[in-house]
Amino acid sequence: MERVCLQIFLVSSDHGLGVALGRALGEGFTLRCQGPSNIGGVKEALSWTDVFLVDLREAKLESSDPSFQFLDDLSRIPIHPPAIVLSDEEHREVTLRAIERGAADNISHPPNVPELRLLLNRAHRFYKAEREIRELRAEQDRSGRLHNLLGTSPAMQELFDLAKRIAPADVNVLISGETGTGKELMARAIHHLGSRSRGPLVAFSCANLPDTLVEDELFGHEKGAFTGAFCPRQGRVECANHGSLFLDEVGDLPIGLQPKLLRILQERSFERLGSNRTIEVDVRLISATHHDLGELVKQGKFREDLYYRLNVVELRLPPLRERRDDIPILAQHFLLKYGQLFKKHVKHLSEHVLAALDQYPWPGNVRELENIIQRAVVLSEGHTLELSALPPAFRQGTPAPVEKSIDAPAFAGTSYEQELKRFKRNLVLRTLRQYNWKKAESARALGVARGYLHRLINQLDIREPGTAILEEQTALSEVV
Image 1 (cartoon, helix red, strand yellow):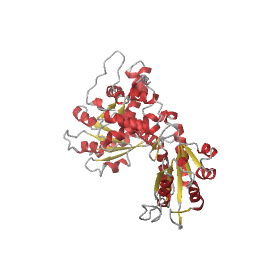
Image 2 (image 1 turned 180 degrees about the vertical axis):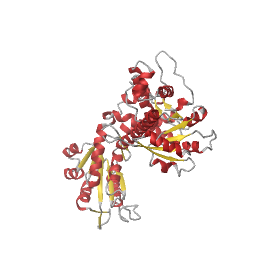
Image 3 (image 1 turned 60 degrees about the vertical axis):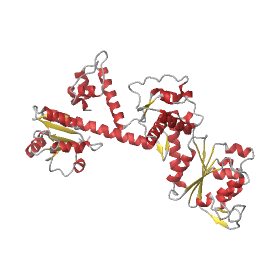
Image 4 (image 1 turned 90 degrees about the vertical axis):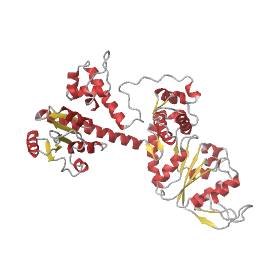
């Protein structure tokens, strides 16, 4: 296996130190040296660097010191290579100030070369782990979303994959599912992923409207076609030319108008009300229904030939009760959405709320969940949404939340920093338990210095059973 060569950027005005360290580190390390005032910019250095080594022997405590300014600039970058500071043993305050500004670790001058190699390799491994976690989280977020649809459950992932494959094909799509499952969001996703994304998406619901109004809305009319028709009007079909037409609740389309829709699909033409002039259109039809169209065909309420024209590809959106794994991520999404809209500080869901949401049958599906969270955000105070903000139906007989084990996966709504902290805490806690809370053995198993392990225990608020929180210097406890 090819040995990885770490690229070390030494920030120091002492070029002799750079030459000496470059030779001492030896194989597996490449070192470049530049004074803090001569670096063209942190971003330029990032393209070359795996680990920064910052010489603080001549640094002053003033914030205007070039070395501290460099650390400040580096800390403003969300994910950056770690910085290890090199300082004199007696300049403790300088070291603490550097750690406060984001330095990953420190080593005294003159450095012990084996210890320096260990620190550089360890810092780089932590950096790679953080970067990989961030990339995996970003990939998870991308895979859990299709346009404005959210879902990480296997059923939704399979549906997202099918939608991505059929969207560019420009075929007619029938979306079925209960009310409130997100059929219009799926239609919009297919339109935006397809070849007609630059064209219009025109939506119309066929539900509970008189036949004449549905016909006028879809096909338009000419002047004088009926009383009150004072000027010609384009219908939804004509407005959707070179784009997509979304017909919601197509199962409620009057039987007398179904032949006109069938003609559009077959001949790509129609006439407005009161006109004999044929208008040609180029539209992709995406339709949706909560009915079983096959059953309506058997009952004679829906044309069989139209059904087969509409149902080239069918996408069935599962009800929320069949994909309960998606409830936390959907609830968190709506919580942040309406928290921002109503200028509320609430950002978290309590365990009791999550348990109550999981137990509810959700007859109104995702739309009902959104309305419930919207109401709760309005009534909530503080940073955590509690059970008292939910309607009474959610507070009756709600079981207590199950205590999560240390190995339980992180909640999907947590931030990257929270998830990384959780990962580190679980790792350290498992190791401490494995070695019966013996710090020296645990530190060796983790491959870290004992002092660094103590800082992790303090910062991550890890308590040994029967003892108080381990204490360490407060400035160093900020290091993760």
